[in-house]
Length: 197
Image (cartoon, rainbow, N blue to C red; front, side):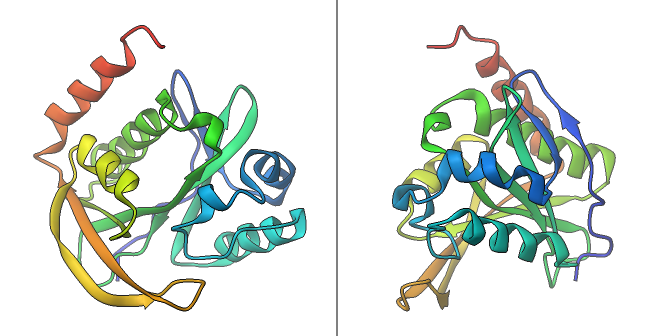
């Protein structure tokens, strides 16, 4: 088990603000990604079809002592969430996962800045020496994004858990170590400083 889970926190960047997830975020979250099968295809829950579905998912994360969920705020609206997760078996690791954004924010600065804020906080402020990221082996878009931020492929957990549709998910595991992070941060910050398309 992770020695100490990160406490809820607000992290501010240029493009996004991360703040503790609450049920007040649900209407914006549902507007951003509710009912969108493409957004939820590789998530560990079925696509929320109603605000009540979205509220139930958020509530489950909020009360789970092994998660620290944060709403992703862009232009004063919640457009997704990302979560610190317990990382059993590692003494000084934390996982970043359960991440989704509405499609309008794919291929935008949102994910890059979220990961910079989350990894900086975990390593520089909280002293974790390893950040873990996992995704479905069929989610090529997510694997590409994780590699782009500096994630090193550690292996694949075969038949790790069932997907919401009942098929078995193989899970691809990546990590970033504290001494690997500074050059990746510099590179990603430079990308954010480029003119946006």
